[in-house]
Image (cartoon, rainbow, N blue to C red; front, side, top):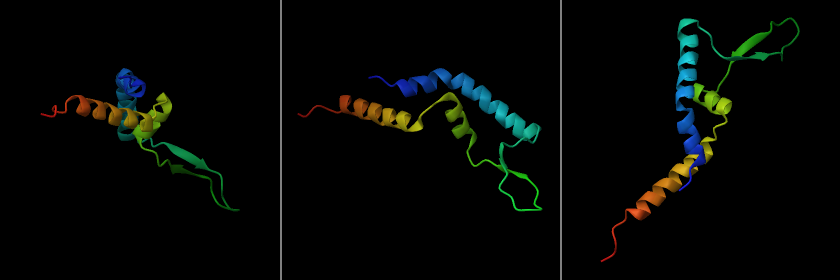
Length: 91
């Protein structure tokens, strides 16, 4: 059974773990938080940055082009395949 998205996740695991560790280090040691610039301001207001809502996992998936919906569909198909082949034969 082919599982290209799950295979891709497996192949990228070391890179994603390293990137995750780096992002966690930035946040804990350097107090760096990913933000977006907010230029929607009114007169006499300061510009400001807003922390992004996405989690590290979502950012890493986007960066590496990982589609979690495809991966979940492949997982379900794989589980269905395994369970159908492990089902006891009718007597």
